[in-house]
Image (cartoon, rainbow, N blue to C red; front, side):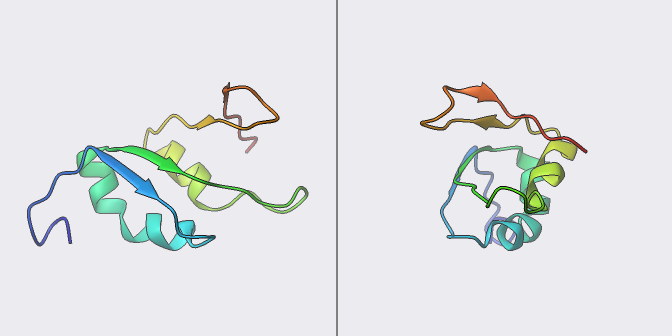
Length: 80
């Protein structure tokens, strides 16, 4: 949609109830060409693999910040 209408968003909020991997995979061109700020909810059960989009976003240069009631705004840390 962004390419079709020559849109260059500077902010994107994603609320897709678990479909983040699919959304971010489909938005790679926009995410890399516009580098918008992103806000999204991300949760997964302890002991399960990290969602695919987390390391992909970091590889694109995004710095992820985890904001959680249990953890005051702390830098997101992903172990490879």
